[in-house]
Image (cartoon, rainbow over all chains, first blue to last red; front, side, top):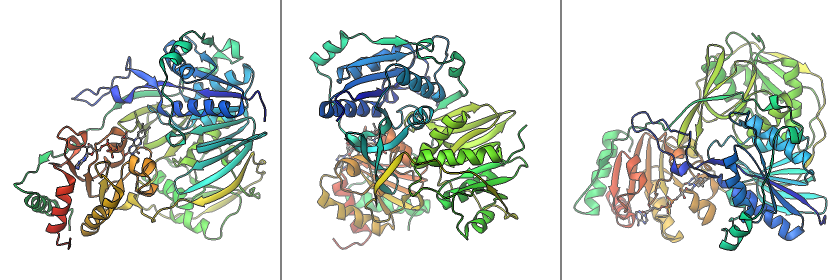
Amino acid sequence: MSPNLRIWVAVKHGVDVGLTRADPATGVVALEGAPRKTSDFDRNAVEEAVRVRERSGGTVTAVSVGPPSAREALREALALGADEAVLFTDPAVPRFDTRAVARALAATCRTLGGFDLLLLGEGSTDHFGGVVGARVASELGVADLAYVRKLTVEPEGVVAERDLEREVEVLSARFPVVVTVGQEINTPRVPTFMSNLKASKKTIRQVGPAEVNLPASSLAPVQTTLRVAVPQVARKQVPLTGNSPDELARELLSRLRDEGVWP
Amino acid sequence: MNTGPVLCYSEEPELAEELLRWTHHQKLSEGAPVAAAVLGALPADLPQRYAAAGAQEVYRLAAEAPAFPEAGVLAEALAIVVREAKPRLVLLASTKRGKQVVGRLAGLLDWPVATGVNELRRDGEAWVLEREALSGNAVSVEQFPGGAAIFALTTGQGPPAAASYPLQIREVTGAFPPSRVERREQRPKGGGGVHLETAERIVTVGRGLKKREDIPMVEALARALNASVGCTRPLAAEAGWFSDDHWIGLTGHRVKPKLYVALGVSGAVQHLVGMRGSRIVVAVNQDPNAPILGQADYRITADLYSLVPALLRALGVPG
Ligand SMILES: Cc1cc2nc3c(=O)[nH]c(=O)nc-3n(C[C@H](O)[C@H](O)[C@H](O)COP(=O)(O)OP(=O)(O)OC[C@H]3O[C@@H](n4cnc5c(N)ncnc54)[C@H](O)[C@@H]3O)c2cc1C
């Protein structure tokens, strides 16, 4: 077993979906300045990275691509057990779209010492595109194992059980390898007072395109979000009541008959 | 302007057929041919099937596929076909495997990509698409440059049949790259073969159901209503009371029945996204503040343990 496994884990500081507010009239959600937090599956990825290190040794480096506020996600990754943290940021880039994120992640991992295992969430809570992991692997020319629910590290690589819509596959690949995970792989630990304190004392390294040999032009956004809105589904909102459960049950069945949805 | 075809690819023929029909339905080809990509072996019935779904061309990579063509291999093979066909658009299915191929293909071609696409149209020179965002809570409208792009479509939308065309088969020479991934095992997921996407009526239970022994009561109600049984994530992923094919929501199945009955379901956004397309929603929850009640046509503030037995009596099910 390689005692110096280089484990990287990518974290996104995404929109906190539970705290967004939609305009009651138009349904439009204001994302500018919306509260943010570490994307759900990324916490599972950090947990898995730390567990791999606990079993097999090595170092865990957390990396995030985003504005300076993404440091918060890195701080949390440190509190969850990551050894080091790197923020890739570039004031010249107005927004990091999936292409920019994938390229910046690939260049950062490649340039700052390389990696054996790179873990990511299989999708982000806010965007849920599910392509960044595969794209990073493609940019780096390495294998990616996606939708992993169980991960075992062997001397030369990993074995992963992954969950598809209708089947489960057990796959193996040699290092270096990219692995994406979902919520089912583990239950992330909760940072403690002590781990938060320790994390707050660590420095987060900051890099930009020049430090990782990336042409600045390769980060320009290609897509534009025109609007994000909560679909307005008009429901009838009819409360049903009755003097007894039996009366209520008969009332419901008669409504379903009137609606033509039953029998 | 690129005059190349719209190129549809899925390793699952039913999904490729859906992509072909959808291309016609959304009028995406703008006069250019609608094509399907086939990587490796071409089963004898496939050209006929694809032609019936509206394909005018099949581009086939005439090479032998490795035993386990993982996503990276499929993407590289598809890139060979793309370089030959020079399509204006590549469409894939937004399944788990499909999204993985899309991610890898995007890295190879550096074309714009989007997954989970529900709608796609031209707007002047640009592509405008709709996809889910914020864990399914919202719809995001996004604009892409009008040139070549890779889009993965949410399947199961059931586009109407397309006209049939004479089919041209074009062989593309090239080879599959070696696989970086080995498959040690493959097994179907346990499940009763439930297919909630096409169910007309669904009775869904959430954590309001106290114990596994109460499932037969819910199944009896579903049978009497001629409905399928659905569940929330905790009952499948955590409790393991139901197989994944019953799981509805962001990370489960998307359903659009005529009737959706939610019993003891709180109505988290990640669940609502899976059932938003339902025609009539009935919610039964004992907490008057449960969000699901605000998303229902008929809202019943009650204990499911008194209402379900009453429903069974009213339906004449012997208790
Ligand atoms: C990234 C991510 C993805 C997710 N994907 C999904 C998904 O695909 N699908 C999904 O469902 N969830 C998903 N979730 C989980 C989701 O956030 C909720 O936790 C889950 O939907 C809650 O399930 P529930 O309604 O069964 O349980 P609870 O939220 O615990 O609700 C139980 C409800 O039952 C009611 N109740 C209790 N007893 C009774 C009774 N006797 N009679 C009537 N009512 C009663 C309670 O009032 C309560 O409202 C996801 C979460 C995350 C973070």
